[in-house]
Amino acid sequence: FNFSIKTMAATAVLLGSVSFASADVTLRGASMFDEEHSFTKTLREFERLVAENYDGEVSFDLRLNGELGVESDYVTYLNQGVAVDYTILAPSNMAVFSESIPLMDMPFLFRDLDHWNAVLSSDAFAPLEADLREAAGIVIVGYHGGGVRNLASAEPITNMEELADHRMRVMGAPIQAQTFDAVGAAPAAIAYNEVYNAIQTGVIAGFENEAASIQNLKFYEVAPHISLTQHTITVRPIVMSAAIFDELDADLQAAIMTAGAEAGAFGRALESGADGEILQEMADAGQIVIHEFDGREKMLELVQPVQDAYAEELGATELLENVRGM
Ligand code: MAV
Image 1 (cartoon, rainbow, N blue to C red):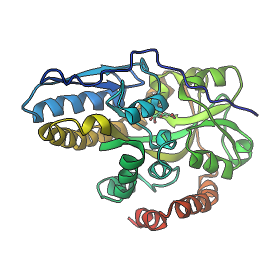
Image 2 (image 1 turned 180 degrees about the vertical axis):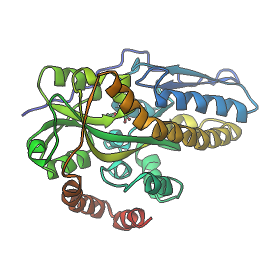
Image 3 (image 1 turned 30 degrees about the vertical axis):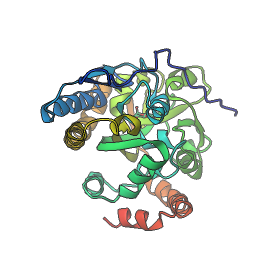
């Protein structure tokens, strides 16, 4: 199979993110979803908290529903300091700029929600944040996440045999393709805004995602079979463009960091708390069929050497051991 990655060019006007002309600052944000999705709710909470923590004038212009493209587009904008000043991103979508950042987004990194919580409340990821700022010009101001990713497919995938050679979309980071390759599937990196069509036309047979996004973007229409592989608990940094952040006055920077931490905690509670309910809602509405997956332990066993090799290549073996040991 030959898959091409085509990124939809955002048609928006890309310049003039921050108006330095007046004392008032307008920050521009982006979300791929509508107001109902936890990413958007978290960004709204972030805006509210920044305004609350800052004495000066600051306003926000958040564009929803993928108006400014998808996350792989936002990454470029953040890096260049144009069009998008703040958003929420999957670390795996930042791989083009920082090889190490997708480590926090690896399938099977966390044992369970307690482990995920412990790691996110520690500073275990600080070296990855530093690399991201340096290499990508992107500042992490907080951590959203907490969705559980499962396989979503046109046909049921319930065991390792059915997973063999399964043509599925993965996010752009090499570690994502390596992981699903190791468990026997046939992964391909495809832009998020092409996934629905690719499944509908049979180019791929499915993908993997968390409940909130499957519901919000109606992926169940083409991939109604959910296999409970529960391979990832998401880590979704709230990010800002360093080019923009560094130009703001110190009080606003401090307000942003406080707001990021608090909005992240709000968002994590929201998404992790609602994950099971959203799956159930979709099942009750007849939109999805939920299947147990027989072989999760086997997957984990096959994936661990891939994680070890990736960490070693990055010089992050100690970091990975530290995270696993928490
Ligand atoms: C979900 O919509 C989110 O986790 C988002 O951050 C990812 O970019 C997206 O999936 C994806 O799979 O690309």
